[in-house]
Image 1 (spheres, rainbow, N blue to C red):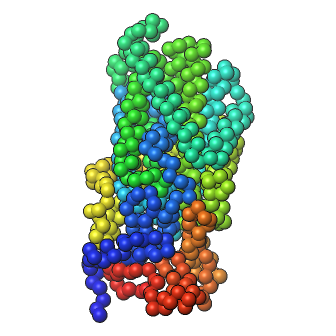
Image 2: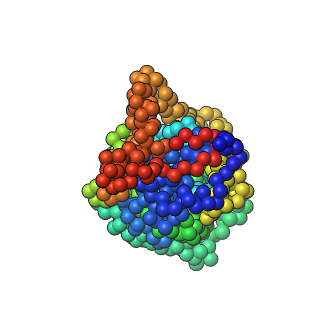
Image 3: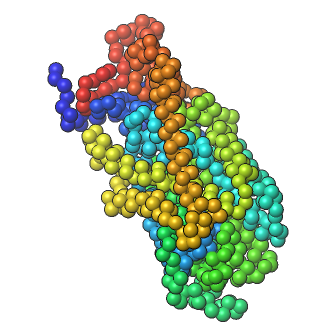
Length: 604
């Protein structure tokens, strides 16, 4: 029997055969050269998942339940996008762009970025509809070689930069705005820590009820922005006596536009920060019934709602507050608007309280989404103490990831000094993320190619237009390149008092550190200590929690290990069931995974 040709593909009958009732105990395998794809299916109503075997196994039943409905999809996105950005950064963006006209164009670009990014994520989710965790899953599957490189890199990045300190600090600032007090730095930090601790306890104690709370607070948040928008239209119509010229900022709207690349880059980074969250619902894909249609409809609705409200709120701000005053507002832009319209009285404090609730809802939504990312990293086996990250005991929630989020956020609230820290933390979080977004978008073409070889490319439920994908890629290049342009006043005249590109260098340094860690962990230590790293599938509990654990196999035992385990790390049935076959009378049955070879020699 000759070797399969490079371009050979499985027949329709073979594909149907390997898709027949795939489960954790009977996993189908399709090989393409040195890549091996497992075919598994979850109980969320999605199609079978084709994924490279080095990836974490599919959890056929979500241990976190299926509590994410269409409304929660909307508000998971809305609550992360509408956090503190629209309330805190419009002044910074105006200051960076130099003009009202360009600021509004930047907010429009942000909407386009969110739409393009959402399409990229939706296509990737249609390829891998059975796993939560979004970025960490998609990067793992887009770049399966070298093995575990992207999981290790993203794990390092997530652990080091897994914080929500900026949103917690802004929440604390608005709380003091409500009570009419000026806090010291440590009072501000203390309230921020307390608020984040309360948010963490909410999501730890009950998964379903915390999702309900996200929905309720999301509705309050939208009502708040609608109120600001309507107020702005009333002001623009000339119906507020103490604002005699509400159209002043819109005449000669592009006057003062900056041509400095650094200022424009900082403004765009803040726009990206304000729209971050358009993909938050993709972190809980395995908790959504019929995930792709649900995400397609309601995820798109969330972006449309947010984009419209962002533009209306900016128009409201510019109608009520003089340009020069608004550009100085920094983290409390909404408060400046409230005071300009209602005065520094009860109305201002009440509206500041609504902004505070909005910020708290953002903390909840980010905690929920990021906990799934960190849990999925744990399921890839690249973090120590695997069960700590994966287990959902005792409350049915991922306590390990929540604890990590709380600890890193606590450190980032307490450690950095006040002032420049807010802007630096925002920029530091977005720069490495843009690197991953660039890799994510380019990887879509790689996945399309591989799935075309498998004969599955035309059967995905969504495909992004190439022009949208290219737009997203080019925008990431812009975000990565322009911050290196020095500001007008020299290297120390940027938005922070220290060197203007510090956050770029630190971001790149984090990625380089990830690579160094990977080389040491995956190659140098195994060569020195004479072992190889192999994945092993573990069932953590009776709730369906399944994970990879990367184990060190001595070189003398590697051949035996590979014989007893399939590519995904599952114990082959002929070994697992050896002691029971005699009593079952199935000695002649081959219990190994079904295999279709596309290219090269079948090595099963």
